[in-house]
Amino acid sequence: MQSLDRAFTLLEIMAEAGGEISLSQLAHSSGLPLPTIHRIIRSLVGNGYVRQLPSRRYALGPRLIGLGESASRMLGAWARPHLAHLVDELGETANLAMLDGDQVVYVAQVPSPHAMRMFTEVGRRVLPHSAGVGKALLAQLPEAEALAVVRRTGMPPATDRTITAPEEFAAELARVRKRGYAVDDGEQEVGVRCLAVPVLGGPAMMAMSISGPESRMTWDFVAKAAPVVRQAAHDLADDLNQQSSG
Image 1 (spheres, rainbow, N blue to C red):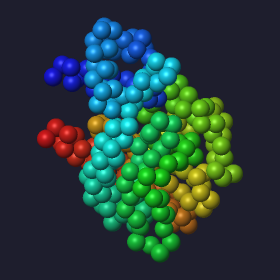
Image 2: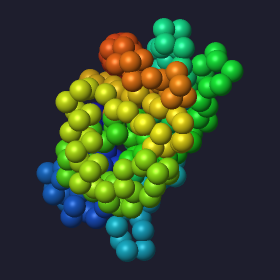
Image 3: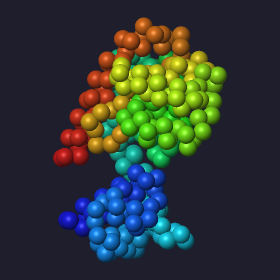
Image 4: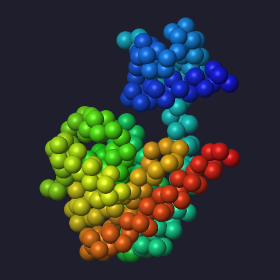
C-alpha cells in the first residue's frame, strides 16, 4: 500500500509540473530517496503509465489517457443531475469544466430548453482567460501560478471584450475571489454572458457555470442566479466526496 501511495504521489507531482519532470525534481518535490523513485518509475514505465523521454526526463504515459477518459465520463454522469437542477431553476445551459494543463475542458453539460441557447460540446477546450469557468478555475490557484498559466497561453482576444493583459486579469481574479463567482461578459463569444463558480471542497478542481444570451442573462439575473449556482456547486462537491469515500 505504501508503494501504491508513493506511485500516485509521483504521478500527481508530474501532472502538477505540466506532465514532464526530471528524477531530481521528483526527489525534491516528493522527499523520497532516489532509489525508491527509480524503482517506482521503472514499474510505471513498464506498465505504460509513465514514459521516458530522449532527454532522460519522464512524462505521463498513454495508458493514463484511457483512465482519464473513463473518469471524465463518470464525473459527467455524477454531475448531470446537479446541472439539470440548475437548468430547471434558472432556464439556462449548465456546464461543468476542469483545468487540463493550460486549457479548460468541458466535461458535462445540460442544455437550456430555450430555442436560442448556448451549446458547448463536451470535450471542447478553450483558453481560461476568456471563459467564465476559466476564471473560476484560475481563481482557485495562487496568483503567481494563475498568471503563469495565462502568460504561457499568450491571452489572445476571442472578442473585443477579452481581457488580454496579465495585470488586468490579476485584478479580475481578485474580484472573482471576493464575490465568489466569475463572469464572462461576451469575452468568449459575442452576445453571450456566463456566470461561473468554483466547485470548492471537492476531490478535484472544477468550475460550474450557466450561460445564455445577454438579453436573458441580465446583470439582475446574474446577481439572483449566483447563490443558486453556488449551492449547486456545493451539493456537487458533497456528492463527489461521498462517491469517492464510498
